[in-house]
Amino acid sequence: MKTIFAHRGVSSLAPENTLSAIKLCVDYQVRWFECDIDILQDDTIVLSHDSTLDRCTNRSGTLFELNRQDLERIDAGSWFSDEYRGEPIPTLEQLIALMNQYQLNANIEIKSGDVSAEVCRRLLAGLDCALNQLDDGREYIISSFNPMLLAEFKRLRPQARVACLFENHTLNDDWYVIMEWTGAEYIHPQNEGLTQQQVQRFKSKGYQVNVWTVNAKDRANQLFNWGVDGIFTDFPQNFLSKYQED
Ligand code: G3P
Ligand code: MG
Image (tube, rainbow, N blue to C red; front, side, top):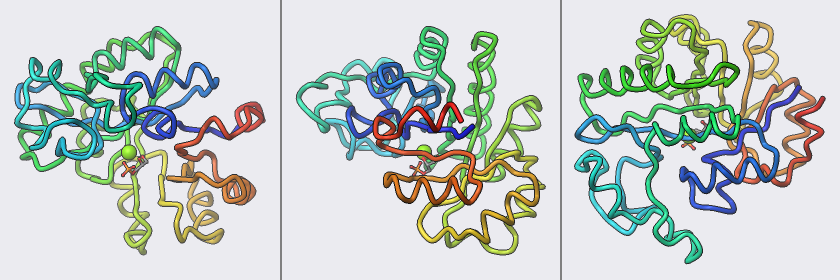
């Protein structure tokens, strides 16, 4: 079975990392989505790719300056289109409730922004606590570009499946050391420049391989023929459900 992950939700049709973008997975029968999480000053965990508000909201400044009560005054939708005006930045708690309601599975990527190690520890503890609210049968993968966060999370929650994210230029000889050290079951390499030989190396070590971000069908087919297990895409609506049934 191949997995199609809706990258930041169905982010080609709705503003990324919002509940609307994730709810669209239900319409397109996409069972897995990817989202990014970060932490506010009062330890509220929210969905956001960036550590600043500038790109995806009507505000500027850093995410970490905010508290929970600030969220209702922030519009994370109109940058995308008028249709989504007033769309809020979701909390992790709201995300977990949505997953339970619609039986969705998640790849939750931990972004650590510009926060201190102590704040990162609070983020990991909050994530661990939130995951306890998932219904039986819901699945999740925790990923990060930061192996230290993953290793620490694995210590906190040994039953969690974790994934190391790699940009192409960081996929050098020590990728395997990082995988071993974190206890990761999944490797999530960047699409651009990824070769069949690299995929074979990952598979020969027994890892599941999910590639980001793949929007072209031809490339997706090529990767699946090489043995890749899943892709993250902004256009899950373009990928036939056959990938999910194989
Ligand atoms: O998790 C895959 C992908 O989301 C990693 O890159 O920058 O889109 O979070 P980015
Ligand atoms: Mg991400």
